[in-house]
Each structure stands twice: as C-alpha cells, then as structure tokens.
Image (cartoon, rainbow, N blue to C red):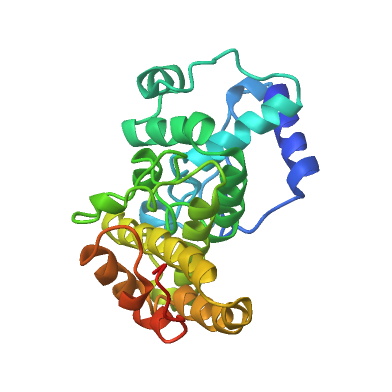
Amino acid sequence: MCDPFDMTVLMELVLSEGFRTNPNDPGTEKLAIWPITDAWLQDKYKPLPPLNPADEEDGVTMATTGTRKAPNAMNFLRQFEVLGKAGEAADFTEWNDAGKVARAFNVGKLESEAIVALQSKIHHDIVDELKSATRTRGMRSFVTHDLLSKGIFNTSFTSQVAGLEQWSAYLTNGQNNELASLFLERLKGDWDRLPVGVKKAFTWKDASVIHAACGGYLGIMESFQKNVPAADFTAAEPEIKSQFSLGVLDHEILAFLEGSVPPIQLKNVRFARTWVVVRDTY
C-alpha cells in the first residue's frame, strides 16, 4: 500500500542505515497506522464504531500521535545523498544562494541559509563531523539552524566577540580545519557532560565565546610549543589540554585576548607562564 517512489526511498534508507524504529533516535520517524484511503479499496471506506463508546469523544487518534516535525538541514542533506546514490540527484546547482534554495525546496530562511552553508561554505570534512555529531545528539537540541546560518563553521568565519578584533588571524576558521574541528569537539564535550534534563542547543552568544576561546587556545599553544623545550611542552600539554576541554581555561584565555594585542606574550598567560624559559624572543 506504498507509493513506488516512497518504497524505493525507504528501501535505500534501510540498506544504507539499517532498519530503525526507535523514534527517540534523531532522524527516525515515529511509526503510525493510518486508515487505507478509498483509492485502494473496491468499496468506500466505512469506519467501524469504537469498541468503547466513551472513547468516541476524547479518545487518542492516530492523527494526533502521527504529527511530523519539519525537516532540518541535516535531514535535507541526507536525503540528497540518498538520491545521489540512487542516480536521481536534483538538477539544482545554485547552493550559494539561500533565497533560491528557499524557493526551490520550500524551506524557511534559517533552514535555507543553513543548507547553503553545509553545501557550499563549510569544508566537507567538517560537514561529515557535523553529521556524525547530530546523528547521535539531534540537531534541534545540539547545533541549530541559527548557528549554521550565521556561518560559525564556515571556512572563512572569524569569531565576532567584541574587543577581540585585533586577534582575527587567530580566530578565523582556516583551510586546515583545525579551529573548526576543535570548536565542534568542545561543543560535543560540553553538551555531553550536561545532565539529560538540562541539555539544550547552544545559543549564538555561548557558541561565539567558545569559538573565540578555541582560537585563542590554539594560538597560545602554538607559541608555547615554539618557546619552551620539547620535553617541557610534552609534559605540560596533556594537562593543559584536559583543562581546556573542560572549559576551565576559557575565562583566562578570553581575558588575555581582551587585555593584550598580538604577538602572543606567554609571560602574560598564567597556565603557560610557569613553563616558559625566559628568552629575548618572547
């Protein structure tokens, strides 16, 4: 009783993803039973009376339990990948124009801008990392369309935290993906540590601060590695990295960036200062 095209898509999804039935898994539809339409019947459909007459007025119906949420950018991306594997990729090519994406696929402003970012502005390796991260955490409760639409994972994105403009070279996502990848790792770690009842999607304000801290951390650690003996860096790096991954160093890094200008002066960074050998170079 399924449309042939829908059946083909369903089979492709089962073959590529396995058979999923848990509606709590991101991207999995809730299974529901619906009445057969008249088109499939020899005679018109005749609803049967309820077994319990009391249920007729306020009983739960399939229509109330089968409500479907609007698709998100990650699901959209996945659908296009499935169609591409089936040799039925869409002819649409203007992925850098959010307005045309919105009109072509009947999606909202934020959704279309997020789709444009995923298709044409975010490095494909970071897109793969995002797909993996949202597959297990859910997009709406982890990384929203708002973050993607504002370009926080885009290759050329620079942290837009007031007072840090002079550090833009350190706070810009580059082609090597080091900053964008570290930023996503921090988001995953911070989100995963939260108790289930208080997990929520990152706001633009919170994510921007974390992104800036990640850029500052990478810059400080690069300078640190250049200015201390290799043995000292090897000894100090694991503990510093662990503290940063827990968010312990964010305030100190941001305070350093706000209170200084390039180049990085390690003597002004508390967690690095005790390891620095006094040299003219710093």
